[in-house]
Amino acid sequence: MAFTPHTSYTNKAGTELKAVTDPTTISKKEYGDICGDVFGEDEMRARYAKQDYIYPKHVEVIKDLEPLAAQMTDEILLDTGDKAWQPQDYLPDMTSDDWVDEVKELRKNADTIPDEILVTLVGDMVTEEALPTYQTLLNTFEGCDDPTGTSESAWAKWSRGWTSEENRHGDLLNKYLYLGGRCDMRSIEVTIQHLITNGFNPDARKDPYRGFIYTSFQERATKISHGNVGRLARESGDPLLSKICAMIAGDEGRHEKAYQKFVTEILVRDPNGVLAVFGDMMRGQIVMPAEQMTDGNDLKLYENFSDVAQRIGVYTAIDYADILEHLIKKWDLEHLEGLNAEGEKERDYLCKLPTRYRKLAERSMNKAKKASDDKPTLKQFSWIQGRSA
Image 1 (cartoon, rainbow, N blue to C red):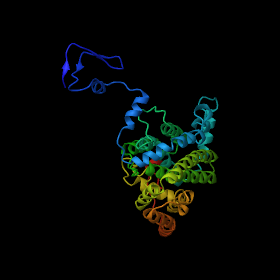
Image 2: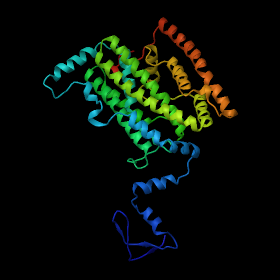
Image 3: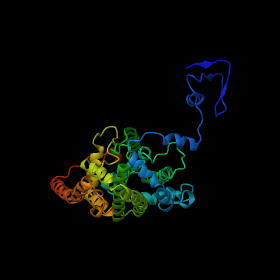
Image 4: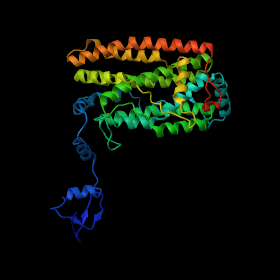
C-alpha cells in the first residue's frame, strides 16, 4: 500500500488520519473500509446483500416471505414489557412483608414433586437456559439473519422478539427450582454453562428451509414436554408448577404455529426444494438441542435425563412419531401439486415414516418397560443432590 505523506483523511466517525492513499494502488473507499469507516443501516444491508449465498433460490423465497414474518411478529408474539407476562408474576414477591410465608407455601407444594419429575423439569430448564445458542442458530439461516444486531428487517425483528419471549422460560423455571430448595443449583448452573459452551449442531447448514423445518419440529416437542410436566405436577399436588409449565407450553405453541406457517408458505413457492430438504433431514434424525449437556462428570447426562423423561411419559419416541405425522398433515404433503419425480419420491418416503417410526417406538418402549418392570435402572443425578431417579 502506498501513502502520500503529510495529508489527511477523515472517516465517518470523525477520526483524522494523517495519510491518504495512492489512487493507483487503493481507492479512498477501500482505504476507508480498512481503517474502520462507519456504515449506516441501509449501506450495511446493501453490502451484505451482495454476498454469495449457498442457497440463492432459498434466499429468494425467504425474501418473498418478509411480509409474512412481519405479520407473525405482530400476530403471534405478545406485546413486550409490562403488557406481557413476566417470571415474577408467578413467584413470591420478595419485597412483600409476607414473603417468607409465600416461599414456605411454594416449598410445601414443591415437596410433593417426585424426583423423576424434578429431574425432567431440570433438564427442560437447562435446555431453555441455552437460549444464546438458539439465537445464534437463527442468525445463521441465510436471508433471515440480523447482521447489525439492530436490523429493521422483518426476519431480524422476528428473531429478536422470539428470543425475548423464550428468555422468560429459563428465568422462571430457574427461580422456581432455586426457591423450591430441593436441587443443587450450582450443579445445574455448571450444566448450563457446559451446554452453552458445547453448543449444538442440528445440521441446519445455514439453510433457512432446514432451519424452519427443525424449529417447527422442536417447538412442538418442547410444548409437549412442558405440557406433560405440568400435568404431572398438577397430579402430584403442585398447582403453581402446573400453571408455570402451562404458560411456557402456551408460548411454545404460539411459536410452533409461526414456524409451521413459514414452511407452509415456502411449500407454495418451492415444494420440491422443501421435500428434498425434509427427506434428507429425516434420513438422519432430529437432534434435540440439549444433547451436549453434561455436569462435568456424567458424560451420559442427556441420555440419562431422556430415559427418565421417557419412562414417566414426558417425551417419548411415540411423541417423535406423532410430531412427524402432525407436520405431514399440517403441510398436507399427500396432496401437494407440481412435484417432479424426485419430489414425488421424497413425498412417498415421508408419508410412510410415521407408521414406521411408531412401530419401532412401540417395540423399543415395550422392551424398555419389560426391563424396567424386572429391575428398574436408576441413575444418580447431581442436580438433585446425588439422589437417584
